[in-house]
Length: 180
Image (cartoon, rainbow, N blue to C red; front, side, top):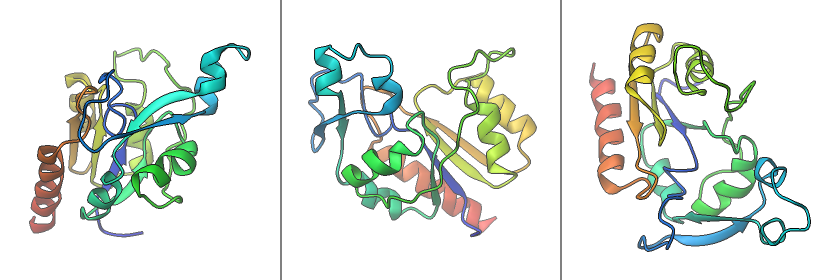
């Protein structure tokens, strides 16, 4: 265990700007991947099943994420497949910790994002920054009220992915945390 804060990474949105249908983002590369969750929802005889899911990733993001003063962990529906498929494509180690979701896409009775409660429990009182494209004000309030340590919830637009300003915000938050 380290005294660095956690950086909890979602894949789709922050690393894979899936709403940029034409992949015009500079430096990104398209990949055809076959994550089990997505594959299970495809017809085995279909073209989509044979080709796989189109995922657009930036090979330089891993180095930029590793340079930040955080302990990295996956907070994504890709779960362990993020280590197998996403990590090598962006330049991250293939052994990052993974939050295992007990039930994906479940409706929360209080209107929270379905990841929020499990993520806060998993963080176990450690400071964290969470990058995701689905965060709401309700999630920010819940974390502030229920998590006993500093937390930064950074909403990333799914058309743009992580940008220079996001990396700068993550760095400054962690450095601020280190000074206090």
